[in-house]
Image 1: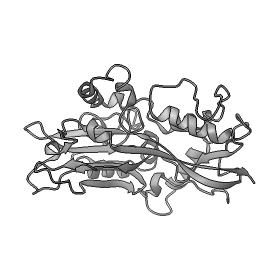
Image 2: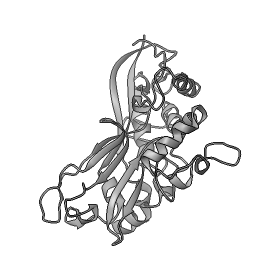
Image 3: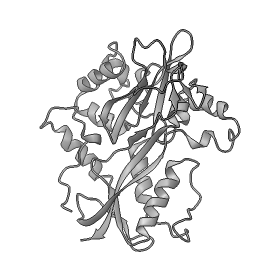
Length: 314
């Protein structure tokens, strides 16, 4: 496989004009965070595809559920509703996917918006063009957004601002939901010496994503393969399944999903909302006979992934 000369932005999204130095800035940002590791368990390792040429043998999606596992186990294992209530707080949505639930005056859900965009991307974009960031916020959240809402007193980008917190959602803000954390997890999983075989993992964080990445990367490296993240590097929503969901009259729902950032297979922002004029809202839909009362009920049907490549040293 030829060396990558410039890493693309997540999902190949173009928030700046073609030819903008922003794209070189993003490449440089990633290049400083990717490293060729020393061989891990089994002789394989992690490599930087912009510096090391590897004969890629295949692509592997490392997948997990968007709903935070830690709110279920152990405290709410037998209290599903309690888990749904707790999971509405973005501070516990730690599977690299966060959502915001909107309701009408009657308290029924009208829209749930999911995002898996990392804060680092928005910080890099802010450094290139504050105006571009403000315009994106106005498009995604509210036309009332002004630059002062998005910065600190020193002018730095404010990750957890009013429009990406109490009054909206744009990108991830949970403390461990960062691209740096994801890259560290992937690169750190090459050394899985304590595992006896490919069915065993060492104790890890109480999430779905961490053991998934550790198991998949570790099993590949133990085969002597070298792994990396596929370009464009990012965390993506890759699946959303409404099978068995029913309208108030019992008829199967239509397709009420809308991708607002990214593309199929590499979704960065996803909305679930019933089109106007149908006479009902999201909160009237039933999943398995139960009315949707929490965004987490939808999150259980959303699948996350990070795309990996595995191969042999050229």
